[in-house]
Image 1 (cartoon, rainbow, N blue to C red):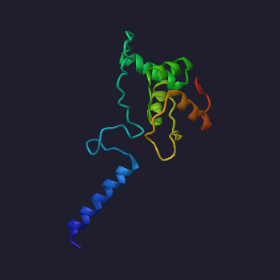
Image 2 (image 1 turned 30 degrees about the vertical axis):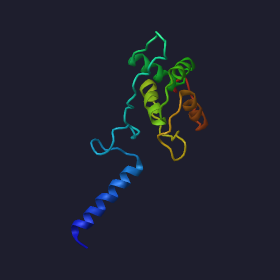
Image 3 (image 1 turned 135 degrees about the vertical axis):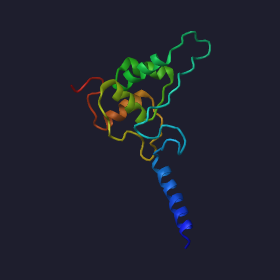
Image 4 (image 1 turned 90 degrees about the horizontal axis):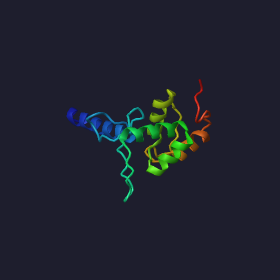
Length: 138
């Protein structure tokens, strides 16, 4: 077999392997945050029709961070804003708020990109035996 054909087959196989694992390489694939260490690209929620109450992106991020930490008032606010993130994104915001790194998989089996609200994230943390929800270990 020609060497160029062998190299082409290896490259195509490598591409599909990388794509299957969900890892993104900057400039190589799409720009969605699939890598567990990427900061999620979250846009501010549109206010409900007829609402005069608007929220800034910084305020929304603060709510998300507190919700990821387990603050029940923030969980309710995030639900009201319709915030749904995948488990890696929730883990990112929790780490930003508490400094704790979560390495336990909290996503539904086989669906790392599944979106969940804050209450479901907290429930999955508790189900995985990750205590200390809502307070620091230190």
